[in-house]
Amino acid sequence: MNYCASPFVYQRRKTREIVIGDPARGGVIMGGDRPVVMQSMLTCDTMDTAASVQQTLDLVAVGCQIVRITAPTVKDAANLENIVRELRARGCLVPIVADIHFKPEAAMEAAKWVEMVRINPGNYADSKKFAVKEYTDDAYADELKRIEEKFTPLVKLCKELKRAIRIGTNHGSLSDRIMNRYGDTPLGMVESALEFARIARKHDFHNFKFSMKSSNPKVMIECYRLLVARLTELGPDWNYPIHLGVTEAGEGEDGRIKSAIGIGSLLCDGLGDTIRVSLTEDSPREIEVCRDLLAQIPLLSNSALPVPHSPFPFDPFHYERRSTPEIDLGLDGMKCGGEQLIRVVVTRATWDKVAPKIRPKDDVKPEAVYEDLNIQEIDPTQDFTIACDTQLVTVKDGVNLPAITAFRLLALKLKQLGRKNPILLKDCLAFGVTALEPKIALLRASVVIGSLLADGIGDAILVRGESGAGMSLRLAYNILQAAGCRSFKTDYVACPSCGRTLFNLQTVTARIKARTEHLKGVKIAIMGCIVNGPGEMADADFGYVGGAPNKINLYVGKTPIKFNIPEAEAVDRLVDLIREHGKWVEPEPVGAAAQ
Image (tube, rainbow, N blue to C red; front, side, top):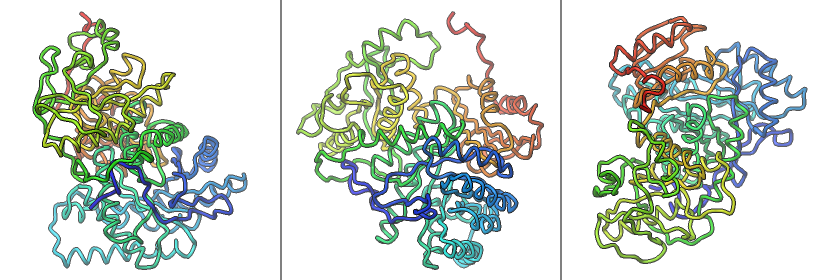
């Protein structure tokens, strides 16, 4: 069972084309050989027609090709008629997607007015009360019949009106029925989506796509790989398009890095027909990142250079770090490999610039200098020998392969030789005449190193594409944190704004970060509404969730602890909750760390 023809040679997955709207009047054809489609979502209240129209026009102006609007109630869904009418009157023909959770009747209303309806199988017709219940085969079959009764009317209506459907499962928002049979796993997400796809196919409806979203890039990558492998097993006519995204990625560098790891890795393997970069920022900024990310894929994937077809050097469906011995890196007794953390290596030039500024308690600091390492540089396209397993290895600069391909090939060759040598990953193997823009260096390093870490490859990393010494060092640590390999700072899971959001996400996220960003190793979820929490907070330690207008619910894990807290008090109460659970430390006074 494989998700792509080869992990070494790029070949775009051949999908069937689906139609979103009327192609003769601004609609989009997705899949096949068509370019990957960029999309985003509105952040305003769906009942505010003027704001919805203006935000849509703003998105289209920067290149957004599909716009999603939440429709949490039938009333919201009905107002899509007014929004679409006004957009068409202004000459804007962009396809509109209604985002539906919990209410099949809202989906039925929305389908009258928009080109696509997104449903989440975990809460469209199923319950999610986090109840533990054993299902017999008969009881499970009865539940499937009930789901079919709920979903079939939408399928028939979309077929009649020539609408499209997105079957979008989210990690953490699976139904109790799926959770109790499969757990909150990639397999559960895939099986949940396939149940709905089978209902659509039963009625000869094929104008749909899949998505498998998670805030954890590793989980997201595993889900999409498993989905595509299962679709391939089911047969050639199950070649439906794929929508890629890392949900609740957050803001700033962290949001971009998480998205680049998840989306970029899959794009480099030929998967993906449309993408959305979910940022806790103004929506038009998502499109810039989409465009920049798509532009890097031809440069980072191997589409022309021949590499022998070989077995996968890693298990693509279950993350497991490659087994290596522990070795000494030589700087202050620093070690890598084995059970050690994945280490951060810098060049001598970077060391000379950043070392004088390092303070004793700093978490972000070089852990080895590349030029001082006892390291064997290897061209994996050629035969090579290694004396022992404790020799640190890397790919030689100048090898005529993209870095992802080269390091995967190195891991394969080591496996074939029976060697378990620790590997130092590099974000690039060659340099251009001019330095990369920081935003491009960030995306490239995140795609390359993040992809390999998600494969389980790598015991140390070296970022060189970012020319700024301090920036390259911090980028390396941020990639490790985003990939779930190290934790050197507070981790935030923050959903992007939408019309369901019950508070200003950007403002509140900044407020929470100002109080908690010193809590190393603590994971805090900031969710605008109950749809994106508690389930989709996944493995967060604490959750700050919009429960009603100006009211916040606080969670420990998935368990609600405090309800209907006035928003003005909620951040203080969150700090109190963290303190009660023994995770709080007082921030150091400004300047104390330097003493």
